[in-house]
Image 1 (cartoon, rainbow, N blue to C red):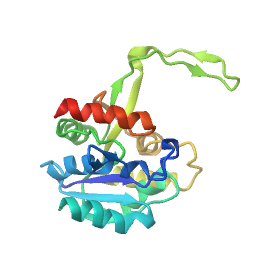
Image 2: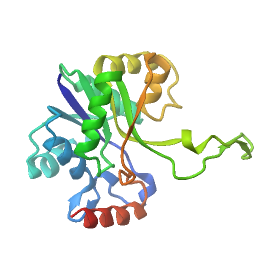
Image 3: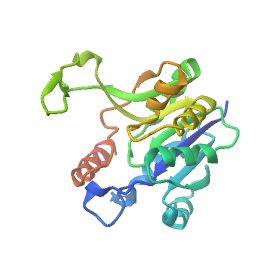
Length: 230
């Protein structure tokens, strides 16, 4: 069964307060994007990688990341869209003859081979799974006035990460159905499967270290994680 990883690197990173997009910021001498690409490159579970980035960044990614670090599995670099779901759809359209697709944020540098194996086992059984971790904090749901509306049981609350892994036909069909409607509230791919895929989505353990680089403080945390892991 052919597995393709779609790595998303088209975000603008407005909360980084930097002229450099977050996926290209350096951590210990290498760009953030390098680390997740390296894991998928080395994984025996992944046959191909589709990198999705901004149209203006395609040549940069090819020369300064793909060629520089010798990534052989990156078969295509696709131009992303305005929203995340547009970029994912562009990546799906660039896939060829794959059975399962791993959708991963390039701003999450600490995906591991263990996560890839766990999610692959789950997707083979359920057709849809997402990495995440049980919430460490109590979560409150707010009403439109900023007041507490509900407090869900912490034991039932997970914070969701990537990779999110699906059978290719399932996620492609869900994206195409969703594009007929307003997609403004769509924040991850599992929401599309929940709405249009009509199959349950399995939760799979990721890692608390599998953080997404979003703010300048996250770069400092990422450097500490790399120091610890090395």
